[in-house]
Image 1 (tube, helix red, strand yellow):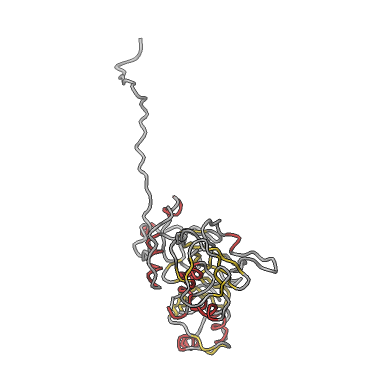
Image 2: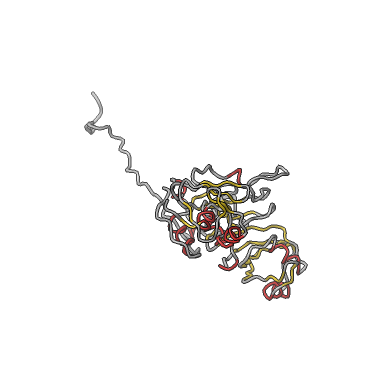
Length: 319
């Protein structure tokens, strides 16, 4: 890897956004080979970078960008470790040789659904930064449902402790009994924002699932606790969405990943197989999003006749 600016190298390693790292450099918190760095300084493979008390070695080759889709179940925290000993997302991610895994956004302990994970810190920072207006869509189940007045307030905006908040879209997704589902979309990811917004209009959230992030849907066949490698074309579109170039080097998808298809997630069907009605087996009424082609193998019919054997017909009873 050739020489690059410090902020670009450290951002790609997931240490922070470029702007944040530039502030560290201005504050004198970054050193290169023992010397205090200044804005515009570059580093090359073999150089030793220190950020505060943390030492970083510049890699010889830039890691291949990878993006995973993880179906986070309830009861896990989005962190590398937890002082309280609770299960973490990091414990369920696969080993990685190049760089480290970085979660794109967080999901609360009691929230399940789509969690994007990458080894590209710059991609992660841009997808989380408010300036890019990345959409997050959730399926939220509200006990007793929401009145028209409550829905109107959530669209127009409610006041929270950390400022005003509103949903860009709020769609009725049906339900049974006292529980009612809604699909809500917003362009930011503040802590427990969806729950706090519903509570601000005197609603009670009984379940919350993230079903889409930056246009990438939660695959319905991906069970809670399981991981799927994002298809290269979708990973490229995700990078271009935030002004980055698509990865030109790709990890070969495994057979299981290649067989899966990205389809919109339906609330209430996660974690179990659902039979499609006979008249809709091809899914014509369901929009296909970033679908992967299925691998099909046509097996020739087996002949009962042994190779080289001749046939004989009986012309009558044996004598």
